[in-house]
Image (cartoon, rainbow, N blue to C red; front, side):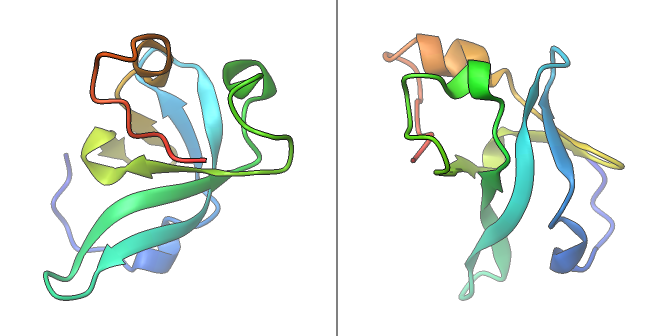
Length: 96
């Protein structure tokens, strides 16, 4: 992952895709740990309706742990959200 410091606001509005190329959503906000000065999560809106169908109410967003982020560029790539949603025994921390 690119460790070059970036303005946090540059994350807002970027599209998020799984590492398998599935659109997940769009970053609406970030969750911060102010003590450690790090991003801890991405608040997503404009979600992929098929991916989250039956999991959250329409119009709601989700919060993905930032540790799932694999790369930040023109888009943000995250570990495969589909597998995490379908395997409850895994580290399933998607929050509606």
